[in-house]
Image 1 (cartoon, rainbow, N blue to C red):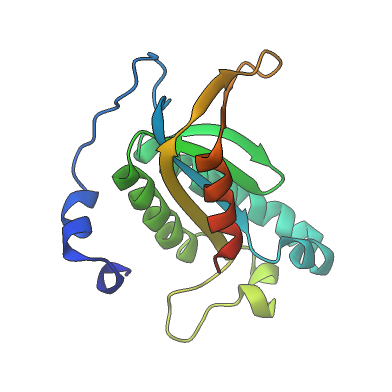
Image 2: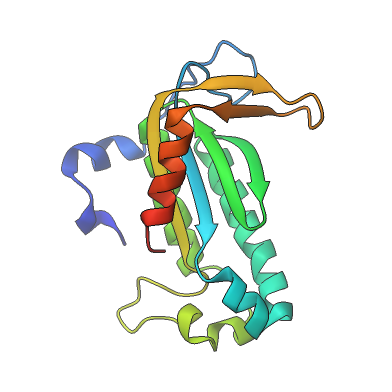
Length: 173
C-alpha cells in the first residue's frame, strides 16, 4: 500500500531479518544509540467526546495493533501515556518498518461501526485511511537509558527523545 512512497533502498531492507545490538539481554532494549518512536492518536479527545464507547473499543484495537507491530520489529515498549506509545528500536530500519506496518494494519483493523461514522475516522474514498489516524514520529541518536525503580521498566532520556516527540507532534495521521 505504501510502496510508492518509499525509496527503493529502504524498501529493499524493510523485510530482512534484523539483529539486536543490545548487550542488555532484554529483547528489544536499545542502549547507547537508539531510534525512538512516539505514536499518538490524532483527534482522540474529540473522538472520546463524540463516542466514548466506540473509542474505548477502538483503543483496545489500536493498542493490540501497536504491540503486535512492536513485537514484529523487535522494539521495546518504553511506556504508554494515554493513547500514546513511546517505543525504542536498535536501528532506524526496524523503526520505519514498524511505522509502516502500524499504518497498514490500522487501515484493515476491525473498527467499531460507530467510530467509522465519525468524519475524522471514516474510510477515505482512495483507500489509504480507515479508522483511527495515528501520528508517528521517529528520530535516532544517542540516548540515556535508566531503570525506573517504580515500574521496573527502562526509560529513555535526552535530545533524541525530545526530537522524536517533536516529530510526532508535527505529523498528520
